[in-house]
Each structure stands twice: as structure tokens, then as C-alpha cells.
Amino acid sequence: MVLRKAATSACPKKVASLVDLANLPSPLREFAGQSQMSHLAFFVRVWSYIKDHSLQVQDPDLPSRS
Image (tube, rainbow, N blue to C red; front, top):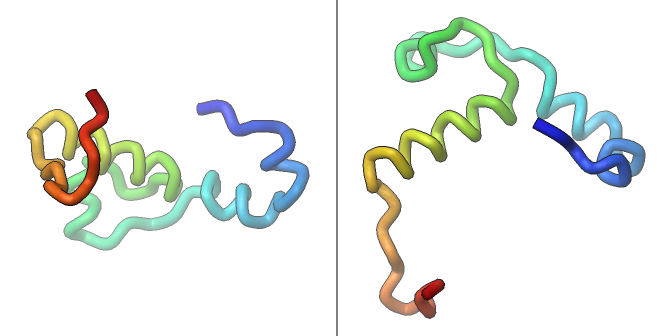
């Protein structure tokens, strides 16, 4: 995953916390299939799961993207 240079230079501590590995608790380990993962990688894994299983619900109050 590529992070923009401006984002990494503006707030390197915030970016580092997204990319650093974190130990996952047991329920999240079962979901991710790994014991350690970065916050950013876990976020991407969750959204992939949501998209793959059609779990995102369209809010009727929001305009459609078509």
C-alpha cells in the first residue's frame, strides 16, 4: 500500500501507528487468520470482507453513486 509523501511527512507518528504491527485479540485473530497485523491492513481486510459478502447497506437518505 502506498501512502502519499505529504501525509507521511506531515504527521509521521500517526502514519507509523497505522503501519506498525499490533497483536490482535483472539476474536480478531480468528477473523484475520493472523496473530499480528497493522491497523491499516486490518482495516483493508475488514472492508474486503464487507464488499465480498455484500454487507454494506445503502442508506436511502443518501444519493446513489450511479
